[in-house]
Length: 323
Image (cartoon, rainbow, N blue to C red):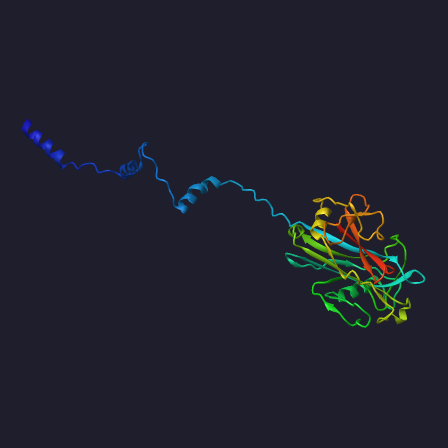
């Protein structure tokens, strides 16, 4: 009896299938394999993409402030020929009758500069349209050339100077009549041009500026016979036509980065008596400061003279930063 029950029980146990592992159990085993002991150091991921993925979650939800691009700072250099001064005249009436041409060549590391603005004053003594608008067109039309007459008879000669910007041009049938005297008097020219300059150009120590000036004292003040030249016309060319400007120093003074060292009189003591200049230690245009409130303005005279001391003029040029 008892033997039979034991056999039946053993038969039931043998027929009962073993419990198969479920999905949950398999998942636990897989996760257990991935768990590393604390003593094991993690491997360093050197792959760039992996590093990027690791760091990306740190930026999620974070706003990164990007500063706006600052506009390039520019300066506006205004150059004005204010007046021509008759220092000494050989005319009996002591009034010289001038033709004057003046141009500016300005070059920086970025190339030859052209003015962004010009002004021209109307003149009183001339034939034809002498309005400021007409004079301005006349100036622009004569860019890139300079009249380099050294003697009568060469009036048709024109020297091409690419990049030259005409600032003043009173010739042929236009004149300036100026009485001898060392006083400045009125601004009998007052033409200007303005150059736009970047910070890089302002700091350019190799920048070059040359002012070309030609003055002729006509033998007659009669405008009807002005065209062409007479043997009695006096060419004020004995200092040459070119005068360099220490433009890097000028810009540094105008921006407050350098002090004006005005300690020397003008090299010709018959001009600008009692005024001290900064000569910049070289053969360049000496400059002094204009007495003007709350602004730095520099100016200096360019001497033009004939063969004798009896024929001499000074052309005053001014430098400032325009608003």
